[in-house]
Length: 187
Image (cartoon, rainbow, N blue to C red):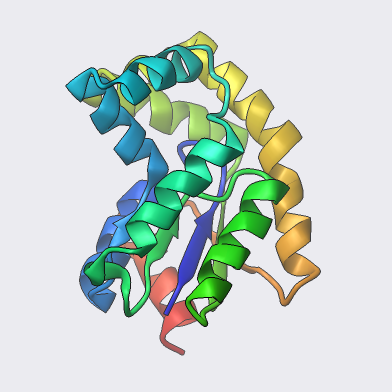
């Protein structure tokens, strides 16, 4: 089963992706996590990604798709993956569809975590205090939300036109949101 979690920054994709991964026994593929690890390791890719992420911009589609291709080739991904915020542009959506088709697969379910901007800003401020992530600075968050609205929000319409999107109310406790997601995944 290949699942895609969509939603704005701070919607809970990472938190819910970890839970869903444990429940379904599928790896969670989050390019944000992979990029942050590359930044921490100070790899060449990490240094490039750091400048892009600090500016609040999105990493190029080609780079994201190369990372997805590499992850899908791993044995752990043979039964499926949970894509956490991977598809952020229509070219990425098309690219992921092609990468999965090469393996005789497709996105089985698209889940959109629907959360208000007010809730997102509060969550990110809390996360910044706990994790100290440089990409959670207020200026960076504002740029990421703007980039999301301009580049990522149209992806919803793309998926809706190709089979639909399941909207999940993304407010409440972590457990309440997880229960809503499980009802969508395991009806």
